[in-house]
Length: 102
Image (cartoon, rainbow, N blue to C red; front, side, top):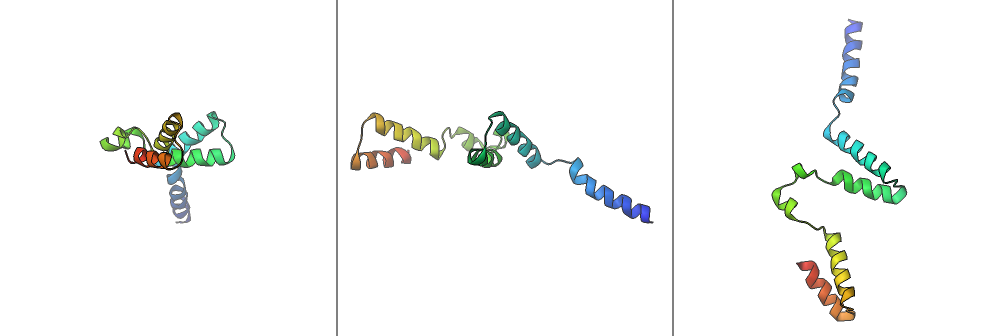
């Protein structure tokens, strides 16, 4: 009876290790990418957060896959355009507002 209980406990403890879930696989992939990029400190934390929260292409809905830019990328693009046009003050604010709404 003791052997049966010990075997059941050992099996229960080993089964989560035998069946690595998709989140564990994603963690491995993100860690490998961060190591390849030689990221440290806050840069690594930021990368890992983004990597772990990102959906794989097959997980994305068609409308999500069609959206080519994130809000941060859009901000960079609008900021660059405003700089190229040498906009200042209220003109820059208006341009940035309109650009980010697109």
